[in-house]
Image 1 (cartoon, rainbow, N blue to C red):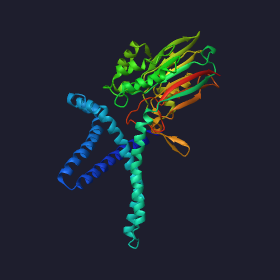
Image 2: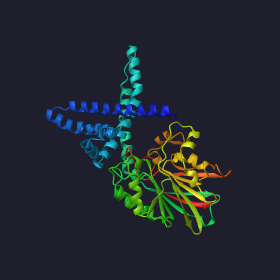
Image 3: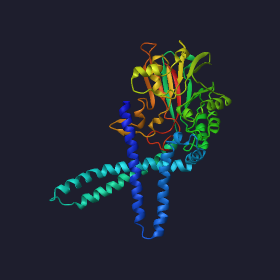
Image 4: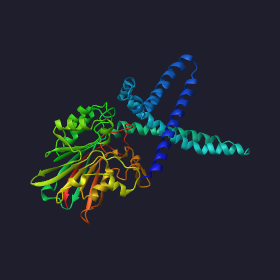
Length: 422
């Protein structure tokens, strides 16, 4: 993970780069409109281009500042509700990531040419090279089109390419009665503009075919307070486990002020949301201790010692010795403390696998690396209670998307974990 100061520098650099990209495209739209021959053509084309870019700027201003601007303004809240509609958010989200990526790649391709032109002005003997100019122009067009192609693929195919991820976790002291226990994990559904109730129903239908012993929901059932939480919960609750269904809350339940509402809605459907609580489940004569916590807020800085004292406060009393403990915690960074407490298995989400992962020199990079070393998959650390033994973490890529409705090399995931004694 990055130091806090470097993270802030990168964050504001990205914001500035995005603003620059939108200014660039606004100028390009202006040039295209001015190039039309008749006033009618200029007026009609300007209405389309300026209207579309104006909607982008509106979303980019209203959404980040909604809490500061809209708290006591019902009219503006209505505007925000309109902005949050799928018909607005989907095309705007796609445009934002594609246009920013296109601007960045075109600038990267054009940079050497700009340097050469600057040097040519100093060197009056240098001759222009039409072939090189044509090559750079073609490369610029290709680079500019590439992000739009990839974003289109990530939206139309990658975002809905649901996969059942089967994972085997070997726990040394797992009771023989629990050997082969099948755990279903659903996380980060994000019902809302990018995830319809119909699509959630499709995901749950795939999950039900797995016939799990236990079902776990690990947070972020919605994105914002205007999203259809009751309908989403009703669908998710249909993914029943043979021995019960349990869950924990994510950060978006906090943002939407829906912690209590989500807990109550799930309870009505027979799903128990654990909020700083534990429950012992007896399965075939053996006990399993399930622990659930609300979203664990990230401490400032990246000192592992501070992490240990910050995460999972009060959970010490919920851990049961001589019993297999499973922790449900939306934030995977709580695993450092969970391992120290001797919790054998932690299930988390939150990262979406980065939504976009890029292969660079045989290693994967994703935006989630900025906030956690646990992006997706199975991790292990030495147990702080049982020397020589390991504690495990599984981080699911989740179902939905947030920010932009795109997934590239990080497909949505329905997780099926099988516990083995060994």
